[in-house]
Length: 372
Image (cartoon, rainbow, N blue to C red; front, side, top):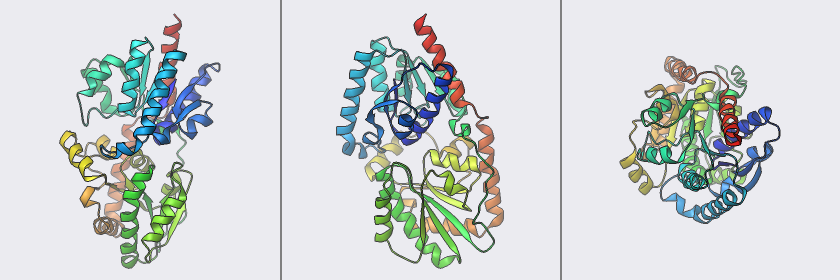
């Protein structure tokens, strides 16, 4: 049984399922996830889009879906009693399910750690009680869990399991600036980030000649939502919607403005300079700030151990500030090259490809121990 409540977890989970099936083609998978897991042959009982949410106050709109998902997951654990429960990120939901699995003596593999090292560190004690093995994807996470006596293996980052060709910016030239806008993979993220990105683009269109904007369309987002937002905030900027993954934007851009999340790490892996923004409800922001124990929120910056990409969070993520950052970076070739060099170093810190394969080996070992 596998549970992935986010778009990125769904994609990484699908790679893991495929790697496990290469080792044992008779494995049966079911659980909670999205289209990627479904395409990988997992019987999906609850669609992850009913559960995915960010922010403390934002969760209220998803309560019915979360309750249904939890009910289905609990019922499945009790009736099926799977040989292994694989949990991918999505901590509040998944740790609750892990507690029931523990009572039922079902082994738990947690792939892609909750960010307990960043906020609400007390959760590590819960992880220690409920999880049989952590497969972590960020280098410093391994030491963190070892310090708390949690069985852990650093497997590398699954983004590196994707073939990453050399960047060929087909639209890049001395006479055109191509800027990517990545507002997020959830409706509420898009509603908060895309308007300020669009307004920033209109400001930039008045300040930069021959500038073009590409908006990344996540698989979980309806294009009609983005079209409505762009139409509502009309201006001189021209936009193209780019489906089929953020990498299609990275291949064509000089730089990107991205909502904080896995996509910022993808940009770093592709060597694309970026500006990280994030906005949530004011209550969620202030409650979150009281609990967060890290200086930066962007994954690329966290892994680098310093700010290699500018962060504009909450009130600082205004159209004017975003436009100023993009303008300054676009007109300073030396700064752009320096940022590119620094973020490419992040890729080197992630090790090589093979995260899915290494995690599959752990999972298969755990299954063999169950049979013994």
